[in-house]
Amino acid sequence: MARILLGVTGGVAAYKALDLIRLAVAGGHSLRVIQTDNSQRFVGAASFAAITGAPVLTSEWERDPARGAFPDQPTPEHDPISHLELVRNADCFVIAPASANTIAKLAHGLADNLLTSAALAASCPLIVAPAMNHQMWESPATMANTELLRGRSITIIDPEVGSLASRNEWGSGRLAQPATILAAIEQIVPSGERPWDGRRVLVTAGGTREAIDAVRFVGNRSSGRMGFALAEAAAARGAVVTVIAANVDLPRHAQISYIDVESAADLERAAAEQFAGCDLLLMAAAVADFTPPNPAPGKLKKDGRPDLELTLKPTTDVLAQLSECRSEAQMLVGFAAEHGPDAVELGRTKLAAKGLDLLIVNDVSASGTGFESSSNEVTIVSKDGDLHVPKADKLVVANEILNAVDRLAGQRASGVISQSSDE
Ligand SMILES: Cc1cc2nc3c(=O)[nH]c(=O)nc-3n(C[C@H](O)[C@H](O)[C@H](O)COP(=O)(O)O)c2cc1C
Image 1: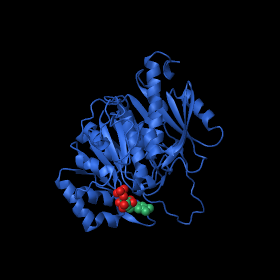
Image 2: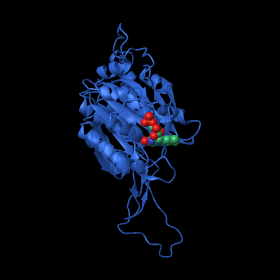
Image 3: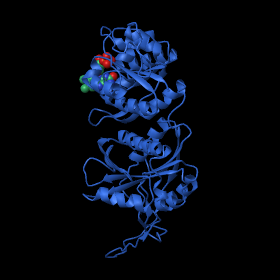
Image 4: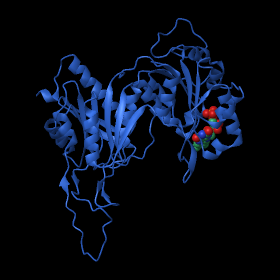
């Protein structure tokens, strides 16, 4: 557990600080937030207070109700100067997102608000994650200011390349992903014990491709985002995570191992090899149910054919197969993309039929969630009942799923319920 002081400045990426906090809290860390005035135009203090469980400070002149203490610390009897006490108690001070303006102030030692005063007073490691328009990031002033900070052993987590907030803009300036920032924090600050330390988690992600010929395939719309979010959330809790990734084109994380596969048969082989070594399987990949039995070796030609008939044969049900050889201690979580009002009922049937511990039902008839979206809305089905997780970012949904795994493990440990496969 580390005490992380998070400084949030005024930029479009301020909302991503909420994801960083969720990830860090799930990883067992204790957080306090300070905001610049301008950052409050993007995200209000109430959101940060709610998810850290601690007051948020924005001004040097307001009293800190927690008197500089982090959520895991008792409130002291005396009333210290808040910015000094917060940095004294923090193991690190992370500024994410860091605006060009705040970076300039840090580089030149300005202390004109709570955040910059706290940074100047900090003796703990300082970590700065810039986020801004690519021209602001690449401007000589910002480059020189960041170099000044690097020269003082301040860690700069470089922004990523991608689409930016302004329409049609692309370039370097996107805030690094929350999991990347957390990994950098944990590398710098020894985080001690974490809730999932020693747990081995296997995640499947993405969608398989079944070859029709040398260039064509039958595929599905799964992007792999849900599986990757689960992997990041599990790694943030301290687990050793392996992802079997079927055709996923998303950023990778240094602390997670990836095995790339293409077809359902490849995924089946990789899962069979990895399964015995895991404590928890999160089977989020969309694996083809059918595959062409004899893909053409070259490229199929039209050759004046009126139709092309494609015969498909069923693939192995990988999850059901793994479930048959599971050990008592292993936990299996399946995912089902179902369509329409019977989605949860169908999920319940699958849970029992496949001997799973949890089944995550995703109603793909709902708009703005599921396959290609960054958000999801699911129902977590277990033997004991269902939990609906309303539409939220996939990282938030991932943490809810891992919380459900924790609750189930806790119930098992206390002997309240037995394993699905024991029935
Ligand atoms: C809509 C909008 C979006 C902005 N996004 C960013 C941004 O992503 N990064 C940045 O450095 N500045 C951004 N700015 C400019 C900052 O908000 C401005 O420089 C401000 O002074 C930063 O204050 P602070 O560093 O005290 O938080 C944006 C401004 C507006 C109006």
